[in-house]
Image (cartoon, rainbow, N blue to C red; front, side, top):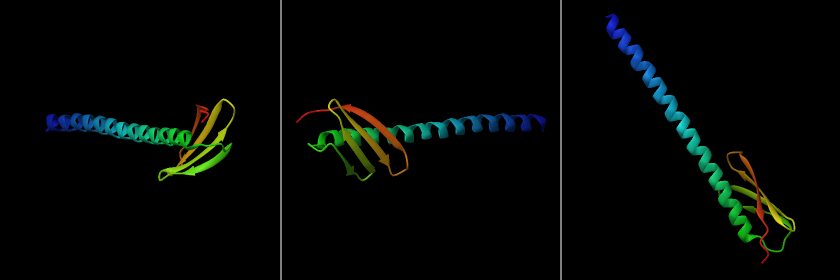
Length: 94
């Protein structure tokens, strides 16, 4: 009986460790997906900016606000999940 309880406790500890590792991995993947979505939105904003010095572009996943200076394009991306990312991209003169 004592052996069975010991094995159950060890199995429970291994299962707990495995599940916490899976949950942490899933959170990491979701965070990476959000960052890559924001980065893609910033790059698309960079491609769409014309002669306007500042503005806003709405995407399916959120809103991108931009402000041009002489050398950089400052882009702030607000995702629907309330995360905000800031990017400074080189200003491409068209």
